[in-house]
Image 1: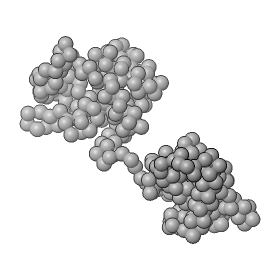
Image 2: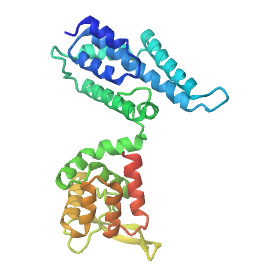
Image 3: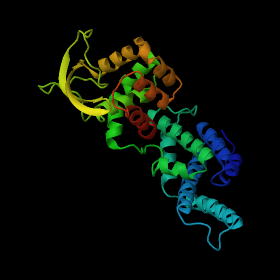
Image 4: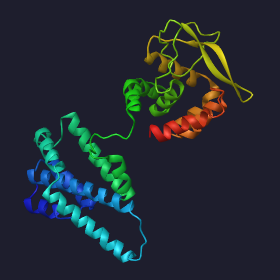
Length: 305
């Protein structure tokens, strides 16, 4: 049990004292009710401070009354104001206390998966504060730091549907799952333009892999855009068809792993170099679109980061 005096000392720290926040979180894990309350209050204060800093950053600066000294005093005032607001309560701290009290067992280790994710999100938010000074963390955390996502609904849906298959293929090839998800998104328009047969049947072909003479499985024929000497042309081509999305990922993994043309792309992927991976695919002739590499790298970096 954490002494009451130690908890009181920690809870009196300024809102952006991340060292104190770390100590409070460790105290909360030990199961102290006082520490749980202090942790939740401090977390709420940090969040309020980030919102205030974000609003300050959006306000025009360097007026006649602005100086380094005035900015320093403004920062100190914002920190203290954040602490005062959190002590009165916005409701976030109370929610955290209720959740922690329900899900923390006697040894202080959460057994509820949702609470485990919430604590992990809390730790990630703190690291963002330490790395960026607060403003960038607000933009990413949103009003609910434990559950908010800045990704569009169609991106989240696409990831939810295919992430498990991408993770399995990642273990087999070393290619990060988000690299493969990005390529599948590019090839299918986030699942909106999947390759289908004339009868409307789904080929489950997520990577636009064509059916050459060595392919012995099912095929579908459909119109596709190819770039010949830099000019776009529409052609009807045969594409491989699979029984499931899992089979599509497995075949893609085999293609890249077994073909020496993709060695540089795989090397870049293993180094988590999205741009290098995308360029490696394009130079190996994976696609004829001259902008394929930049499109793929953009999806990976901006949408799936």
